[in-house]
Image 1 (cartoon, rainbow, N blue to C red):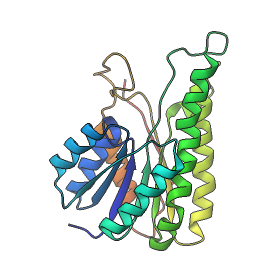
Image 2 (cartoon, rainbow, N blue to C red; image 1 turned 180 degrees about the vertical axis):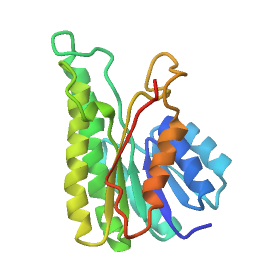
Image 3 (cartoon, rainbow, N blue to C red; image 1 turned 90 degrees about the vertical axis):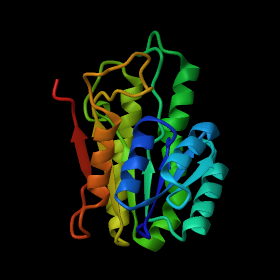
Length: 225
């Protein structure tokens, strides 16, 4: 087992859970943060107590994230990478049919949750010259008519570029992973012909395992169809 620890938000299902599995296979230890304690406990049990720590909490609450980062450092000794993966979409797309409260709820996770994760983990990453990975989207690299969700992911891509410049000053790195459609519980119906969570997890691990001389700042991952 490596001495390196990866903290993952949105870790209970989909991309987050598959990244935890991939990280443990690569010898990392993982701290699993999400709202569903039952799912986190099950995943931590699958991965083993020496490799995984379940940390139930809400990504929209700064106090939950601060406590989780502190517990990760206390339990594993360091936070060497953070995968800010928690996010959500919208039930109704577009402006005229969109629900303003739903927009606010999404922004609390996709924008503010990303910022709280960064703020809570920044000092820990600075100590380890660590690596920040953000889940962006193909929707954050193109204009989609009237899409509020797409706009939230444009924020993530902008933040990733800014943090790459910031973290470079202390020897850290930042990567944004921009997948197209992925077959996860994010969608109401299965998308078996699209990307799988393990495809995105492999991209995350490629960035994390890059040699120190290489900074992988963006991975744009699309289904072949």
